Length: 236
Image (tube, rainbow, N blue to C red; front, side, top):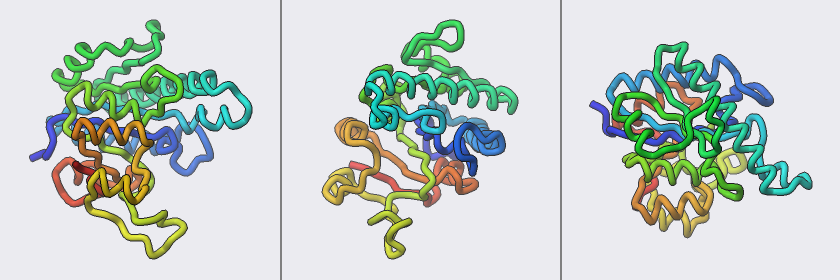
């Protein structure tokens, strides 16, 4: 039996690249969709917030001399492209999904309307939230925290390329060890940078737990949903 009824899954744009240098790797997205389909068939209601870093990152654009707000809007457009690709892969796998965007592009995707998103979830459809919060200067981590709280998710699942939160960067420090669980306050005091500060504070204040896990580790999503030990739980 699944440990959660409704979850918010945060996928980075970079996770869609697989081993490619940029863009969307078809094999990678199909594998992710297969895992998402499996937990959906368990009766888990799934909302997804997707990033755009595989196409364009607002922060990178602004550091290259571009106006930060303009760069962030470009990043939001990249998340819409990723959301459409994810929706298409789900359709081909027989999974019904809806894309809701914080920026209005009514010919292509639905606008973000909370009651409609809630209804989709209750009907068993997967809802993919695109364009972040619709505001520059806020990351898709913040969008994940915000949407998770808005739709009443029980937990935010942050999918990364690392299998949890470590005492230090495991790529730089081979002696780094992974936490099975850690409190928000401890993560702040140790400056572990689980999510960006705004998203992290929002989850902490609303008592929304975060689970950090590796999306590249096969079967990790289902194990976590079934309540098996996987990744790192950040809690109040």
